Amino acid sequence: MKNTLFIFLIVSFFVVSCRGNDEDVQQIDQVINLYIKDVSGKDLLNSKLAGTYNNVQFLDLNGTRDLVPINSFSLKKDSDTVNFLDYDSGAVRVLIDSLNPENKTYHSDFIISLTKKIDATNSIIDLDTIKIEYSWTPTLFQISKLYYNKTLKFTKVSGQPNIITITK
Image 1: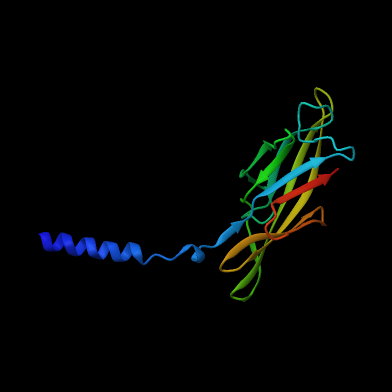
Image 2 (image 1 turned 120 degrees about the horizontal axis):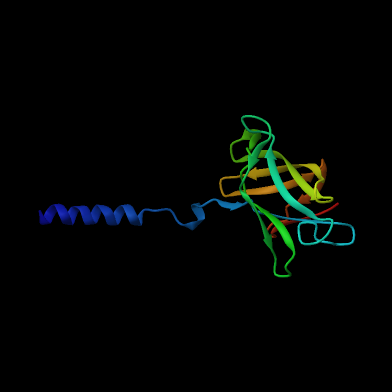
């Protein structure tokens, strides 16, 4: 019995010590902070201000059916108490290029539905499109570009956060 326990401990020690190092881990950089402002710099996501959006929805265009709600985003405030949409994932990613097994390209497409209250009974809904391109390598998965209404709004700069400001 003692020999069995001793052998088990030695085998366990070898299994634990044979783990890969941190260089084997793929880095993931896919969180987006999306600010929406007007031309004067007013925070359009602050529902307490007049003329701002009081409801936001993300609707996936590549799901099993169109307009599948994406629930993996949240409204947050930065250190200056400016509101932004924090999006990390949720939309279906479609493989675009897989010829090189060490470098692949994906994209996600979704609608951002922004509701603005005009008065007690009427609202306006803005439907805008977002396309996100991702690059994948064995060591890094990251956002590479973001298009807002088919206009390039963001290109990844290595080591920098994914902060995008949309002016409406």
